[in-house]
Length: 193
Image (cartoon, rainbow, N blue to C red):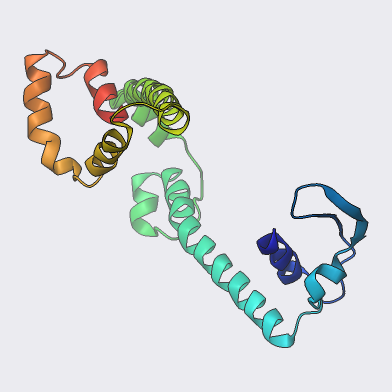
């Protein structure tokens, strides 16, 4: 609760905020009616010039990072609408005559729909399997009492310390014996694990 009060104070720029909140007792019951947030813990709602400067710098840094992360995607989109000659002539220029020939080639020659279908199947079923197992396991560890609960929990946590590269060859050997190599089920099980 203190964190949210301080966050509200930090977000108020310039004048006093006029937002209201309900004050609660420590025992959980409502103690008083609504009161202005300017009285929150005796903290001043006015920002100093240093706080305003730090907010401006933070916004500047975040906008810069957003531009840095979005620029390659825009660059790819612009160049995907050009033909080879236009791309090699000037990769940074906007397309003179936008064309979707590259996308048609992608679908006709490379069969991208098959890869999209494979990704969707593997992702959806892996997420569902992970979700079901995680919910059941977390409920058991949080609510049930059983013998060996702590060692089992520590064993599960300990498996997170092993890098995936350590288990690649044993998994491949095991899956080849189970005839799960090059199957959806094999990839889904590995991804969900």
